[in-house]
Each structure stands twice: as C-alpha cells, then as structure tokens.
Image (spheres, rainbow, N blue to C red):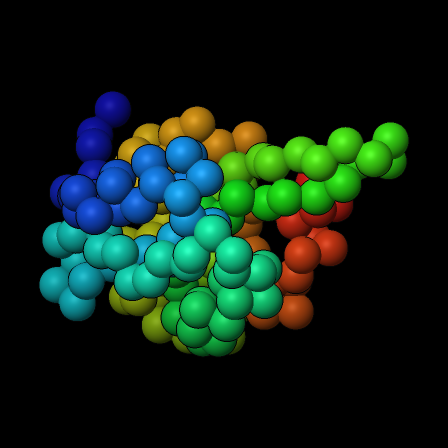
Length: 136
C-alpha cells in the first residue's frame, strides 16, 4: 500500500485529543495550498453547536472535520459519538482541489481515530444535525 505524501499536522492530533477528552466540540481541517500538509483550520469550544461546526466549513471547498455528536436516545440517555466528516462538495468544480482530499482521506482518518462513523457529504444541504444523527 502506498501512503499519501500529505502529512497531518500535530495541531490536528492535539485538537482531536482535546475533542476526545471533551475539551472541544469539533475541528475543521484543510489541505494547504501546496498539498503537502493537512492543517487545522478551526476548532470549536465545548459549548459549540452543530450549526457552529457547519458554519466553519466553506460552502464550495472540500474539508475534513470531526464532530463530537451529542444526542438523546429514544430511551432518554445522552450519548456522544465522534463523527469523521469528508466534505467534498459537488459545487467545487476543480478536480485539482478535490483530488488531494480523496487521496489523503485515509491518512486523516487514521490520525483522528477512533471515530464511531464516517460521513461523506457532497451537497451542502446534507450538512445537518439530522443527517449526522440519522447515522446512529
């Protein structure tokens, strides 16, 4: 197996650990301009909402994200599940921009592990709490 030439910054590993320890709610990551590194673009405080997370993701550009999804089960329990997001919008027409995200997704997922689910979103309309919650 050939590994991706793109590396994941230490900031992402640290942000993921902070989410894992319930110190932050989410992270959003992007590939830098020369496609050599995945960098932390933003991190949400623990009291951030899903709407804050969605707002931190550009409409027409790919991004990776990790969100600590908190919800009530049908029997009233509060559950937290880590969700890995690969956002590659169909509205982004540049293959040169999309391609590195497809090639480095496994590298990013490996650094942000464990996550309970992986969600691929290609349409901004699908970037909703209900869509994420529906996976559990």
